[in-house]
Image (cartoon, rainbow, N blue to C red):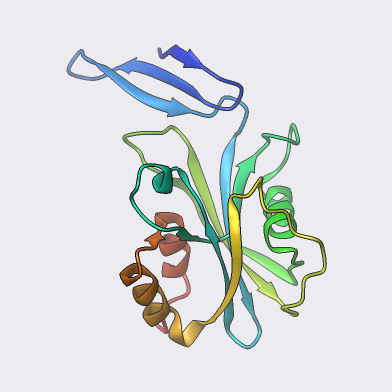
Length: 182
C-alpha cells in the first residue's frame, strides 16, 4: 500500500514498501490514466518533431529537448480514451489531423524507478503537412515545430545532440517502431 508524501494538483510524491523493507519513493499523476506519445509521419516519409523547454533545461542539462507530441490521458477530459487523447494531442501540439493512427506499443514504463506512469506509443499517418488547427505552445514549453525527412532522422538527431539538445526517451522509443529503414 502506497502513501502520499506530498500532493499538488497534477503530481504526487508517494512511497511504497520495497521487498527489502525500505521505502521506495516515486512520482505519480493522480488525475491521468496514461501518457500518449504520437509520431506524425507524412506519405512522403517526413516526420514531425518539436523542440521544447523541459525541466531538464532548468537543471542545466541541455539547450532544448527534441520530442514528439505527447500528453496525459484524462487530465483535462475525464474518462478520455487513449484514442481520443492521441487525436487531441496531435491537434493541440501539432495542429494536424491524422488519416489513421496506429498504436505500436502500450504499457511502456516511462521511467519505472521514478514514476508510476505508463506510455502508449503511436504513429500517425498525415496526408498534409499544413496545419489544420491552430496549435498551442503549452505555455511556452513548445518553442519550435520541425519536419525532418525520415531518411535523415539519425543524422539530424545526432547533429542536434552535438549542439546540446536533449533527445527524449519517448521520441527514441517511438522512432524504434519505424523499423530498420532509419
